[in-house]
Image (cartoon, rainbow, N blue to C red; front, side, top):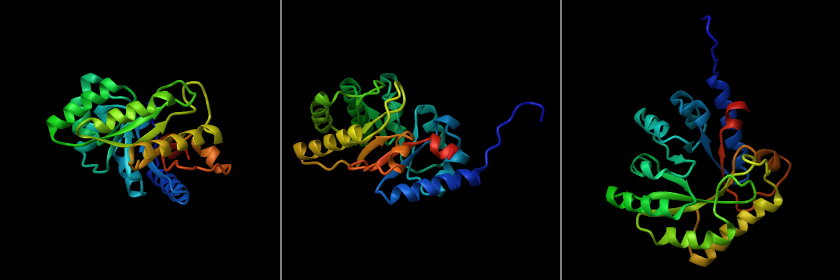
Length: 227
């Protein structure tokens, strides 16, 4: 072949995924495999699912739709806030989405009610990276709205670090996320299945002995692909 090509060794990706699932599982952390760097490649996603990845994260609704069409049956997470123009497709094909805007939450609720389904919501919290998220002071009000809206299920809260401005996960910001999750559960007498601490940038902190606290979920892409 004269053109450049990319060789993908599925057995190595399977090893990466199985190793991360097992090691993080020992700390009570589950993994969403983020396939956006592969444009939702179905062979890679199936390899990850076979290695124990329980959900798939994507930034493009088109990739989620394509994966669903191939028969991938694990829950799909839209890892960015849905566009208002795409809420119908998001509710139809993504089990969960990351959110920070009340207007979008209201649109998701109306759409889920029309479609007769429940849509999971992870509320993203701003912890210093300035990429996305609800300010900590506003989180309770947005959580209250989410819980009051029909056909939405508050799956938990999450953060995105090590992205826009290079703020790394550390004991301080992960403890803040844990405290926010606990405070919401106490305030509203609910259980939040996910406290989603972040992405592959969290792994060096955890490997150095960081206490995950309430963090029980990570959204991993780079680490699954590169080891």
